[in-house]
Length: 85
Image (cartoon, rainbow, N blue to C red):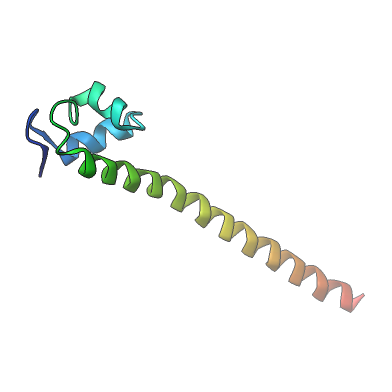
């Protein structure tokens, strides 16, 4: 879908710009032109930036939960082993 009508930039191009390292409105505007003219698309660009930030955080929290489970499992395993000794 076209996000920036002034520069005719779609959401895929903006997502690619963000994936390439643009982390704010200025970075997106400099890279692909979206948001640089009238500003009508800025709320949509901000939403795409927020979605990308959440996507980066989600895997980190998943890894942390998995690591916590491994620690819990190791503690449970050691407790069972020590009670047999």
